[in-house]
Structure formats: C-alpha cells, structure tokens
Length: 61
Image (cartoon, rainbow, N blue to C red; front, top):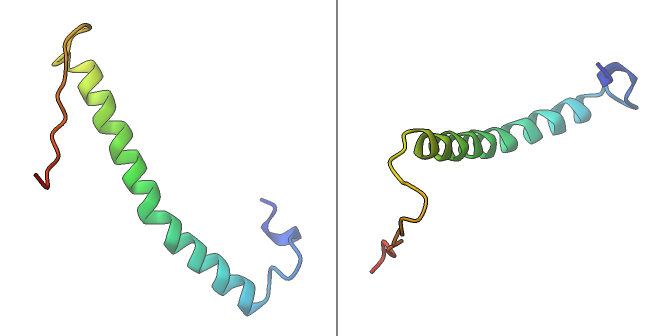
C-alpha cells in the first residue's frame, strides 16, 4: 500500500532492486515455512512424548 509513496518508486532501478530482493527472500521464506510445518507435524503427531530422549546424529559421521 505504501509503494506509490516511496521516493523513486517508479524508476527502473527501484523496480530491479525490489525484484532482486523478492527473488532472494523467496527461497529463504519457503525453507522457514517448511521447518515450521515439520515442527508442528512432530508436535501434533504425538510421535514424541514428554520425557523421551532424542539422540541427534551427525550425518557426516
């Protein structure tokens, strides 16, 4: 909603920078959403109960 009121919002450079910022943020946002979704899946599937211990292994080992 504030886009038209930003200084130089109608210039080609501003449009290019905003497009680049959007392309850079998109993969990061989808990764975060995937992590949150899998966390909720673990919480609500009740595969882990309070008091259980989880051992995290190093995949490179």
